[in-house]
Length: 340
View 1: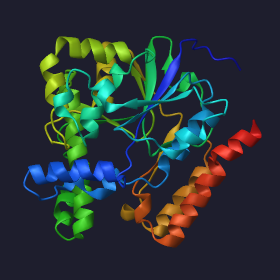
View 2 (view 1 turned 135 degrees about the vertical axis):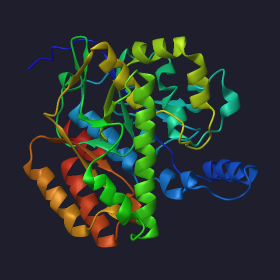
View 3 (view 1 turned 180 degrees about the vertical axis):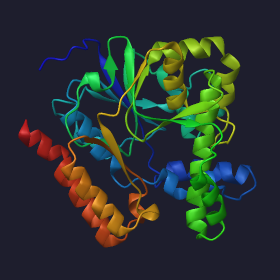
């Protein structure tokens, strides 16, 4: 069936190879500059590359062929799949965008290792379509999607749920009590979630929401370029302040959330849960739980998006199981070429 949404749509992926010697040199130099102690926000797993970008790009080419361009935003790096695309029908469809391009005029904040700062300038990609999807490199599609799953008429489609600013649920109180009894790694996971939650709340307040916020899932996020650029035109101080930290800070806002809140505030966002996202996080989930989730994703036709975090931390057998499943559901660039 032909799409009813006839405007061009791009995809933007943020990617970093944390094992790259150039990246390590920059990061270690900055850590030395701030005293030599590596903060949690500079934990190596945050920059680890385990081939996720390949699945991300292939899934977009395979399941969203209607995308105009796919931009990969990097810091002077080139993922292997970009070179593999040379000589293929998609060679000109996938494009690299260096940090220096989107941070033009603000080079003093580079290098940056802060995804929240990077997201703040994604809309500055030259030639970017008015409508685009933003993805972390660990977001994948696992089934065909259509433009209307993200944009309809003058509306963007968002998925998640409203939550109160102050969580008074019993589970929240139990979580606080339970916190001191869990392992240090589990405590760090809970702290990271709390910080992400606060960043979402910061974003909600900027758009005028004071008593509730909308918890956005780990999946492709639809943005309208003019919405976020117009906001920053009127709030240059917020824009520059969010750019400055080289590592994530608790007082920052999340631009993917801010873009959604601005649309919600103007009545141009449609909340829908027809398609679901699955989050795979081996350090935070048992092997039994993960295998059950994967089986569920195969059975549930509404499961369209997958986020795979910290894949490198999975035990060998589980790592192999997850990769085999991704190969079956998404496949490789070579398989995609053979099918076309």
